[in-house]
Length: 504
Image 1 (cartoon, rainbow, N blue to C red):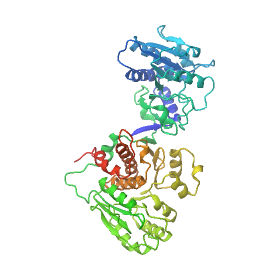
Image 2 (cartoon, rainbow, N blue to C red):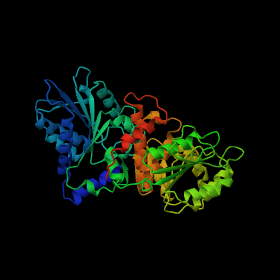
Image 3 (tube, rainbow, N blue to C red):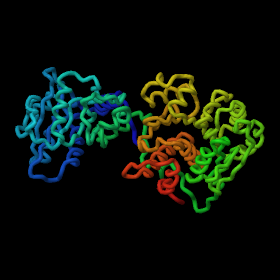
Image 4 (cartoon, one colour):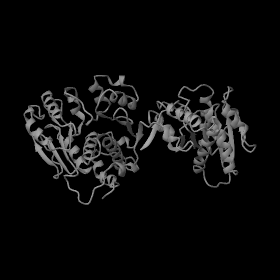
């Protein structure tokens, strides 16, 4: 997993490097800049007759990093034309920045903001104006400087944080340069994935601070998954493996008018690797795969699962490895109360995923336990907690962590980004496509969560992993042209994504 940090974590890391590791602040800047310079060189063409790099250096330590990079870049690539634009705003500069300025070689040309004229030929702009201490509240003349830099239509590389991006909230100033690449020190910042962050950071490259074991001191509580995590989290399948070893999923949902939702959930659980999948519903959708074991139960006058089906459902969940409740369930009060009794009867060790209409039964449960996974979108979450959507705030990570800090279940809040949290830990889902915003997408996710957990993955890790797999399936189904998809398109690509899991 890739760690994601808050700005205070990076400040604490700097303090550790200076006080515990004994690295002086100037030496720490030099070490970090060496890593930034090496990463920057990888972003430049190996050779070109004429190539100009403009480094915009602000008054603080981020500007000092930029000045160190200018000197080190000249040493590595003396054939480049390197310009440094002094963006000190006429105010005081940090001591480290001043020292870095004094070390600049004569071959690196200093220019002023007034020199940023249209006739300059610039190939790469390096944004080193403001770092983690900056935010969206930019003061003059910084917005004008950013506008002047944007006129060159050059490749933009940000050092640590794009200027004008709040690395805690993801809110960016309107003039913030949209970086092609952000070379960030030590770890990704949480604001890179919130609000405006994804649109202004571009591709993110993490650069170690340069002090051995320094990054290990960061207390990581927020992460994101990558494709390489799949074989780490999904268990291997030994040669002597049976369908019973792969787990038994029981899906409960649907009404006479909505049989498709639970059918998709059951299908996704099967496609995700579950050994056996049972579907409990009042009407079976005709496209339900024949490999799914269906149980038609009585319905009420409004087409919802009848309360008299309790005994039949309870006998099925007694043998379940995982239970998924909610897709297409409807809002019938008697149905919800009956299923709340079912959930209360399930042993603590059996994970229960509650989604969609099933979230209506949460207030009816006798207790919430750590093996319950709730998967609301923002509107369902607001209804669940008795709040208005607009009052939840704009940060889904903060919303999920704050709620989980007061409650036991695992929460997967479907938002941008989606967040899986247990309170002390959180994993965000940042892959995927906006084409996944289509009917049935959430039903597919519920089935993937159930199918992965059924194979022995712990509920928290299984939910986070399923969210990543679901998003990856959406991206692959949409293809490079980001074409429109329907939810079941994701089912076809699940096997190739999950094939990266090791086999025994």
